[in-house]
Length: 388
View 1 (tube, helix red, strand yellow):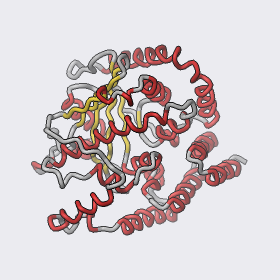
View 2 (tube, helix red, strand yellow):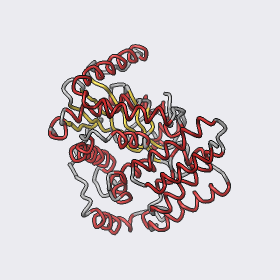
View 3 (cartoon, rainbow, N blue to C red):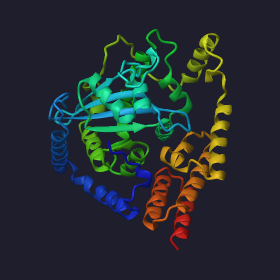
View 4 (cartoon, rainbow, N blue to C red):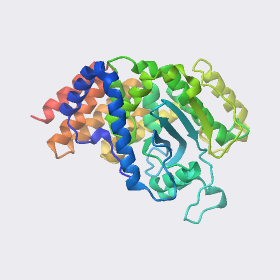
């Protein structure tokens, strides 16, 4: 499946800005144009389905668009991450409801390599055999093929959580936690689905304003997907207009294979105490190699040291930029300085002037959207110096 990193895509800052401006002026006509947009998207999806049909697994109803969301988990230098979170969205663009089908990462999957018996599961299918193979195995479990795939890694997830003012480290710990549950992996998967549903209900209104396209685009840069931005924005607009956030019963959660789970809702006010309780209870049973006993300060120091060493030695730059690893740094000043440093260094190694303009312009757009005017100005000065 074709992958694209929008942060280095050669699309042109001017083209992006013109698109955003024209879209903003066009929002007043969205009601009359929305159906035409969605119909065009559905037509394209159906054409693509015909091209990909293999006679084994179907795509489902013609009024539904299928989106597979994968949370990828890997070490900071890992290029072959596991599929740690697996959620399949069935989006009905006629009735404007959705089904979120969650698949536990430990679900059995055939892997051609000879492994230990306990290692034949979906998360490893992605890691050992590649993402495309892992997606095929996930689709077999669900029984439906995906029209689009969205992947988000550890760093990008932190960026999204930060954008919505969540306590980043604690929220990610809650989403990944499984040891306290009797059916740990399935309950964790369901917890993630409940969190996503709560996000839709509680935060979709943020996109009801006519001036949210820059924020939409920033979110778009925090993921990897084969869905273009215009399609993503049109589908989001349809669900915003349908007020699905006021219809929670029309967001249905299910699991494949089925497990009996409980609805646990994330609470930012109590999460620190909850995590502390988990750690105290589980510490006697964990391996000495488990990271639970490592402090946040030690983890942060390790991340920063890796990034600084890579910057000084000009190593792993593609990996760091592609995965936006600076987003793992909690201290804002350190994070923003590292981000700028890598943008400057990476741009200096680009040979194509248009790629340089695109790359730095997207950095400026991100900082302006976040209200970080000082860093946006530094980006503008860098761009000016680079194209002189």
